[in-house]
Length: 228
Image 1 (cartoon, one colour):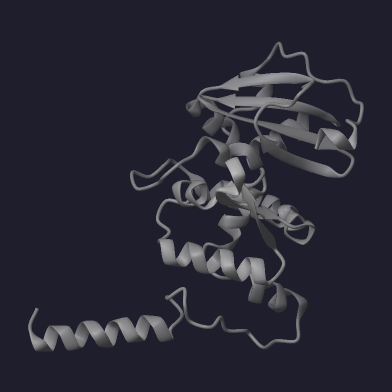
Image 2 (image 1 turned 90 degrees about the horizontal axis):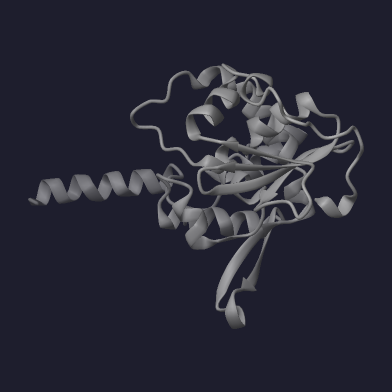
């Protein structure tokens, strides 16, 4: 690299850092006396809401988050975790044998953002269209739209969903919809879907009634809070 190219590289690097693309620069505020603006000061950075999406289903290690957020860099992920922890959205604790690794988990304030993600997911569904060649996908990303689809079929209940090797469970009760990692200990029913079928239900091109026409859907009884 010649001197001119080196100088241009240094200037570009400096520009992106000042513009806020580096995870180490101070986060800026909109400085609007508005509740939505204040909320965006906390969760409006690129990747922040996707980090929260990953934590909606339970604790995650740094390596889990990095693996399931394709495209994020290690420094940006570290910066988002640090900022969200500082702002009380998530908490970090030791996990694994003898606390060998750190795990991240939503605080009650962070978990309160789930309806925001639900609304964004519903709003974004018509934008999905056909999967692009550049689109990454993870089976657990379908938990939000599948939760809504399940809630359209039942008023209350717990459903374990298996997509390939991914397993999570959806709880529907009078407080809304939630999903957690792994199978439910005593589910009202179980759904087994392949990726194509899960995609079809998530995008609204097929309904659960079409996919599982003979399912014995749960009775309309609220699960206990412990089911969450």
